[in-house]
Image (cartoon, rainbow, N blue to C red; front, side, top):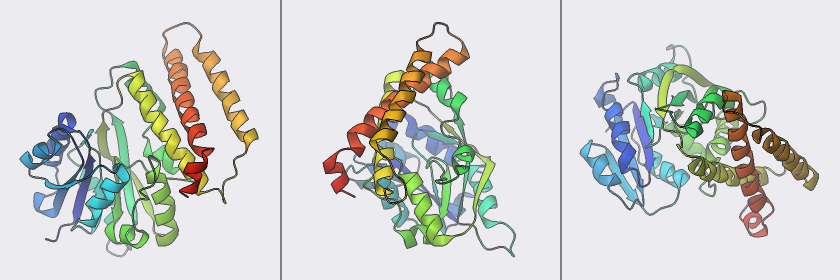
Length: 296
């Protein structure tokens, strides 16, 4: 089966949100014959597979291995020239696929791009934790892609050529998080093609609604960041002095977060403290761990 694009969705215990994602994909402006939907059930204990099958997705079941492994399983089975990734807690806009394809295919005289990423915004962000992510642009691909050394696009709204994924063997499955950043560095070094950001390719994302859930997410990011830093140790130095300075920043942010008030500024300060403390705690537990270092 030849299609223009394959949409890959890793899913773990996602029965509550996956239906909205698949319903949105079913109403894309791109003709349905031009794309396929692959849901990789990463060892779910709920009805994730049943939900996916009800919406007509191609379902691949596997034992739990994490998002990177699930995405690799999905794109390896994909038939499309392009592979678009989104997540089970996302709701793509009706023109999402059309805008990504417009960005990567371009005029006939241009070589196809390496890939593209779109804009991710909060969906029903009513709680303080969810509002904080919106205010800080936590999933803002344009901001992440502007990083001077390590640009990347969050994996909830990104597309790559399948042959480029194949050439670099896809995501590194050792990562707990940050695998999207690592892949983007590796795939760009190998391919060298242009990568496009298009604000018109919109995906809505359900941010974490409680501070406890946000802490767990950020702790995972801290683990992934430490893995990335150690993996890139020959390019990025990180010393005990660097670690102490980082903790000094956490203390400063924590003192600001203790100030009274309920303004938007106080929300930003408190959310930043939760984020920095969670990531720093996870980073220390991972980066300085001898057993973890041995994996790289």
